[in-house]
Figure (cartoon, rainbow, N blue to C red):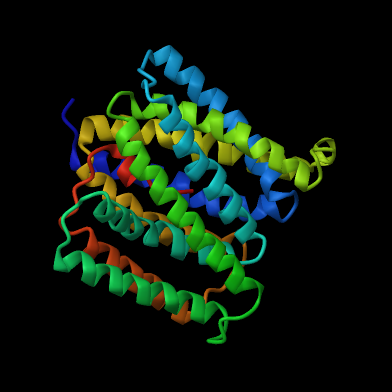
Length: 302
């Protein structure tokens, strides 16, 4: 199949819209229901859907199950526990600025720890992105670095680090299995890990009373934010190549900020926008010569 430039852009715009919407609907959901319970239910639904698609497509699941479980511990359990709890303390616009933009830079750091060559552009990019992240958090706290919002932003930074570990482990696990198959197994395993933590909130006794709006939010996160976006992403990478996937990292925060303003009524501070732009610039510099080994290395966290 020969892809047209317009077709490539359209596919990745759709993926970016799905992932950016996760910040909006994630914020709406945690305003109504406990974040860990929500995440467990979301990935239980998404995991079953992805597993069914993988079985129908007959893709390989890989043979290194312990490593897939470890990746789920970081990418599903750790990421969601930190980010969605963070969303209860900070605006969705903060997460949209921090996580999708800082994640590729952290991934480069981890890749360097695993033997990737250290080059000046990466060091410069990491320094620039760090300044950008500090700028975003400083703007969110009014230059005081205190308060709930800063705690939420720091939790989101931790979530970005967890996703980067997940991406690095995914680069290994997908060598023996399909990215779709590995993601399906990781989602099911992650849901199983999240489930017990829900008993530390309300023990799922509140699930029957969840409002319809919360279920719609979960439905979006499971169907569009996870299942459809990942299936479409991997389908596109196979046909269009992994190189163009990097545009998703640039589009997600832009789309998410627009949605946060229009749907959630959030008003990011000008300094936050500046910080986000600095992070994106740092990401571009740091990843200038970094070529991911697999599509999962470029997947944007949501």
